Length: 445
Image (cartoon, rainbow, N blue to C red; front, side, top):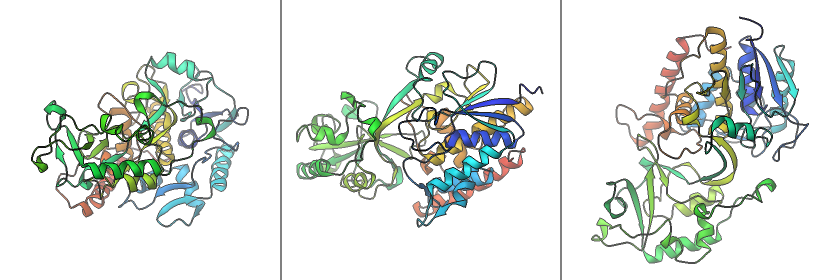
């Protein structure tokens, strides 16, 4: 291959971009890694280092048999992840969580990038990707305003989003089905929703707790981000009056509780199926700015959700991400341009680890295409890497939303397992399938 073909650009030196550049360079491909800092600092950044952690020093749970993110850690280690090497080298005590010294973590990655003979770290703000060089866009949730016009034009109207309003998602097997029932409003659409009923007293206590719950502090750059009237935080709606929720997302009309003789409850929280396997259920209309501990405390007051396992908690924050299932193929490659890949939170993954994982995959896919003519096959959907990739590129439904890795994204087990055994069995299956996939071709640097 020509030297020109073996030169690529990666835009953005966050966790995804740094990981993608590393994976490419380790496979013998020369990389120009473009980062706008410190020429222009992002609103959430404080340093000039690659892979800066700006919100938390925790990369979340480390036990692969209890947390899907722990399994993702393990799989990324097997794939030669730079980010996991940095995390393991600069881990600090945090119980079962993988927490790091943020400054040393980023410094480790910075030095690895700067001293790699095939990576050139360049300070430049990009207005568009190069027209004649393969490129990975890994610009993150706070993509530069300079690049946005090109993206809007290249991707098409309505395929680039700038704000997240995420409702909590609950594991199906943690819902107490003896306290709820399935029914669509006015019986339209069959039994599509799970309904959690409240009597008047329970509803009043619930609203009181919404009004006094602690909310997350917004970053300075988010203070001027307006809420959409049709997508208000649940606690903001509650503050407008006691009955606001009963005439909004918790309206009971058209629903009859068979456990109470078919009568209409005072209020209802509806859960909507969130994936094909029906292992995940979304709390309809429950986007919120409450802190995560407060969400778990308050939402477990809802009948049927007393033992709820939250696979994703609610959030409302500034974000930039694309409608990946329509735009990207299974290699994170733009369907309309096969030399342009995307990675990181801009693809619709949530979290530091997930962002780095998508960078790892994008780098591996691009390297395979450049070296052999086509990207390698994607990891099995039964693995953490494959489940996350499947969500980003294959999600069904009208509305695509960012997601953290969780066991609800994995295909169900063929044989039934108890709730206690299910995660361990999903992990065991993932390990077997990952080993088989890795053995089918040379993937690790």
